[in-house]
Length: 241
View 1 (cartoon, rainbow, N blue to C red):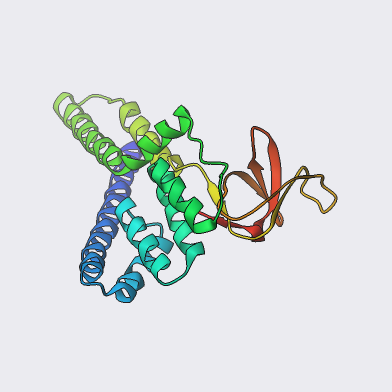
View 2: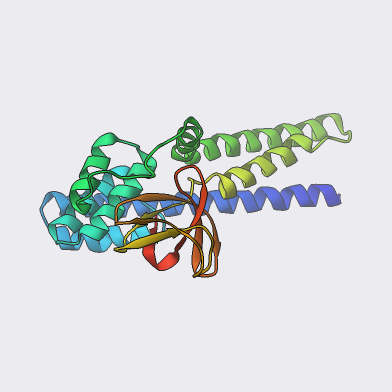
């Protein structure tokens, strides 16, 4: 009996989580339609007022990021335009984006834009995270239905391992399937050092536009990957994407 209650609570919890996700996605979709309409009518400031809060809440699409970059550049905010393009590149690596960032930052070469096969695979999974969760949720409901039906039909003890396993997988996908953490150098000049201290050896002095893979955070420092080695940079010289 206790087992049945636990499974029921899990089922109800997942239903409400799923309902919340659907509601949030619908609100975002409605906002996006309104903002895109404003953009098409060249009401760029009003469109940006809708785009920005959604972006800050982690709700955005590649097309939305390109529009935000276009608006920011038109307003003379090259730093923000570069940031939006960098975020777009995270989702959709494209050599043309690198060239545009070079143009905005005045750089002739940029580092950190290399994308490995592993990164591409993770980005692919992140892009299809919602459909993956929908499929897993559907499988969970089917599994729950079959489990309850089998228990009722045969009136015998039933294994809940398929249900528990699916709940665990959904939890992992929902909470840990995220794009690699990255940042964009936005301070001029910025210093990459060997240790997270003022006494660390200077490895390189760089200008805005370079993209960094962030490994972890340590006080006022980010631990990063830089040219195939571990290095550090001050947080105030980087904008997270």
